[in-house]
Length: 264
Image 1 (cartoon, rainbow, N blue to C red):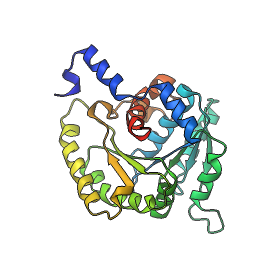
Image 2 (cartoon, rainbow, N blue to C red):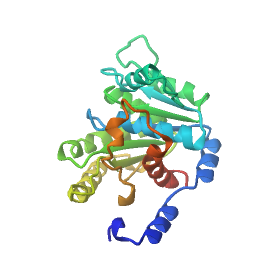
Image 3 (cartoon, helix red, strand yellow):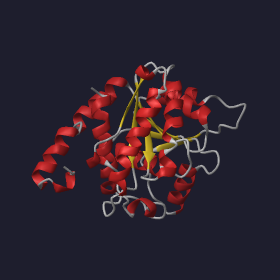
Image 4 (cartoon, rainbow, N blue to C red):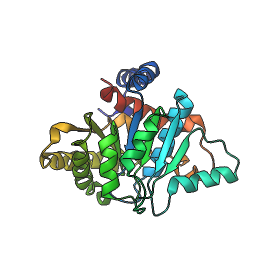
């Protein structure tokens, strides 16, 4: 049964049962010191930067946490460019940012930067843009959670296996069990495409993990259908118009759903 067919009160109850409470989430983050989240797919244009920004805004606005976003996109520095627009419009951004240049041979490694940031922030979010496999591997060494945003498109779905293999490689050096969540985004409920693609995505995940030798070190899941990210016009519009706290609720509910298992 699709969520949309449930009576409203039953739907709300289902959401409550599948979400980590705000108090529980805050207590868990405080207990681990710093929550590290990587956002990335080994493919450009999958919505990584949009996801990173909305997740960062939600943690900062809704939970009042100290958040830092690491921009690793050496081609466009998407987060930095977004912040420049915010400065020009005099928008107040509730999180800090750091730029990582993977091409700087004299610079420190990304995992070292993350380690340093963990001492100063409650949440560190790494937008793994176009930094490549090496940076993705380094993030997976440090992260509690990797978010793989995937639109219901065959072009993006086929990049799931190599991305998961790289995540599994990084998980070997992770002191925690790395959790990976394949999040469907840009889902238009007016079409059947998201529902059609869910089995295809699940199949690609299963096939990829069957080929991973150290699969016990990484746990891969997909959020329930109720927590897919919509094709809302707010997301492409956010570049020139500062999002409001209410615009982050969809990503916030998704994060509370995903982190309920991570924090268990």
